Image (tube, rainbow, N blue to C red; front, side, top):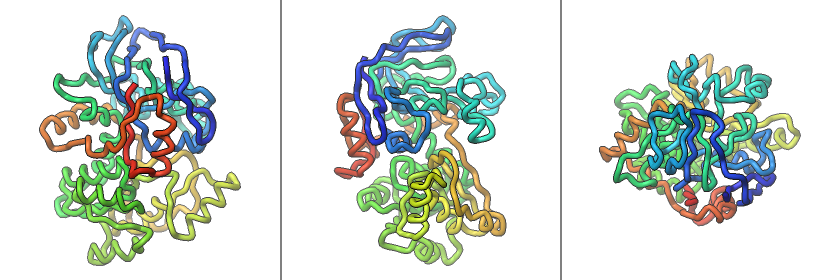
Length: 389
């Protein structure tokens, strides 16, 4: 089969690779119909995630048709259309029983690597390095799905791929980001980043009861999309001082909750951005936390900072004094996608959410390398690339 594979820093190649096979009684094989390039994929592309190997198949947002099943998968049938959550979860361990699917205790065979970095391992993830299990991803013609009796969600008749594809990651991630904010009626929420997750976070915050949502970014086309499709108020951080503008917009108090939807590759015109770049070059820091610092220091006293932008390792100049002395609450996590798929599917069916508005580009799988370049460099006002196998 053909698959999009990692070929080195800032390089991916579509290659011939072996077809996936049933390895476990709970496996399923999917024929991929749609897959997408996620902002998190750029962390792999840019070389910031360790243990990625030449030839690894990328992609953790995908869906397709079941073509083969292991003997213990009783809830699916060959021919079913399904969308697959990006975390791989067994559904049976203590963490899964608590609804903490992204930290499944049984799905990451390389958990010992993460223990040295994080203290405890997380669950497996499709197409996201050997640190998270080395599972082949879904930017391919076919994919093996472990624990298929737990993860995949059947797509109702009449729904298009575009409507449900993002239940695999970005839509549930954004919803969880808003959920972690404990939004109350009348609240103001600020969202750093107006990419797909940031845009969906704006929509989610409104649906959860926010009165005002402010999107912060530097690209005019993304801020325009935030205004036109998500009803956000906007700040361009290259044209306005974020702190002064937020205080002016909130009567000097600051937002009630702040969402970091940017993560480890943040940009900023402030001097701390240059500081972080130097430390990264010297291998003294892994991530750039300028958006996170800004979210923390601009949240109102007693407010909540919700982190769903991906961080991989260690940051410097973390404003712990601001967190402690101002009674802030920080919540973070890789999304427990399984928990949110069915409720969000119902919201899509009811017309509360139209996830399709973020799609700006469609390419065949063979053009995945061009899609990565376009997405990384924000060419042609690219917000979200969907690939067809």
